[in-house]
Image (cartoon, rainbow, N blue to C red; front, top):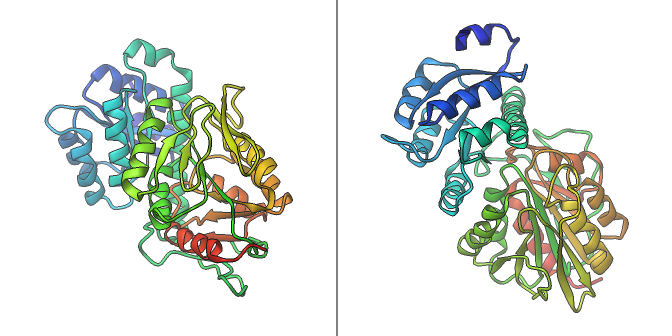
Amino acid sequence: MTSLSESSAKKADPYRVMVVDDSAVIRGLLTRSLDADPEITVVASAANGKIALSALKRHDVEIVVLDIEMPVMDGLTALPLLLEAQPGLPVLMASTLTQKNADVSLEALRLGAADYVPKPSTGSQLTSADNFHRELRGKVKALCQTRRRRAGRGLVSSPSRGSARVGRPLPNPGKVEGKGSPGDIKLRPPPRFSPEAIAIGSSTGGPQALFHVLSGLGPKVRQPIFITQHMPATFTTLLAQHITRASQVPCVEGQDGYHVTPGQAYVAPGEYHMTIEGTARAPVIRLNQDPPENFCRPSVDPMLRSLVGIYGKRLLMIMLTGMGSDGLPGSRAVVAAGGAVIAQDEATSVVWGMPGAVAQAGVCSAVLPVTEIAPYVQRLMARSAA
């Protein structure tokens, strides 16, 4: 049988993973799944958090796939200790889709986990779950790529530490600033309106970013907020509750036929696209299970297309951290209608895929650290309507 070290030697500079799960069967399945990708190798495995901490000292690990429920030391207990032992280490939580595990996973994200992946409940389901394996490998590679790129550029990873800004300050447009972000980003002029609605798209790392932004906006926000975060159904229900507690912005999972209320946030439910019908004075939420877009359901693009038809130039789009480029076509539609787009910067994004796509497409009015997005939006909201 090929050892972990022998497997590593067969690959040129692979992404190095440690798998932590109390089930030997699941560890084996996860290891085989990851090692099947030519860009990934599993260099260590552990049956609980205590063993994982010890293994982290002996192996060169770039990312940890961490189970939640384990004996001796569970995932939530191990998480802060792993991050303390190796600052900047991406930790990908792996849990079955129960309400309890979803709640714990969201708490883990708040405590510093980079992302989560919902795993099937049994080994037999895990063996045949192609979507799970694709998502697992994709997230491992995206998080490792971000870490290597950030290390190469010397980017700051903590939102609280001097992050880069690319943007024009309000109310007086000024020169573009940008230290640590791509210099070829071209920004549009700042919007000259107070938005009537706010749309937010996010994926990998999104919950933490949502908590930052919505906490900054606070309970005084008067615009409806529409959120598409790539998550399964059990998670989106709890995400809305966590947003309400963390930000004091009332937030619910969108339901078909809901009449939109000013100052309320709506999260697209897992497995459903969330769109808006009606008029700006009487918008109504509609849900559908049309085919995934950009491999996602919910997807940001259907939400944006529908919002553009209602709010036009009074729509503000915020693109937060996430893999892929979901929301890019919709953001272009927002700008074409006279609305505005702002994006989270690379230094504070867990993965600069979705925000990077809109930033590099030249549709943004600002590219900002996550902690500066809410103040920017507040200044916009304080402006009189054009």
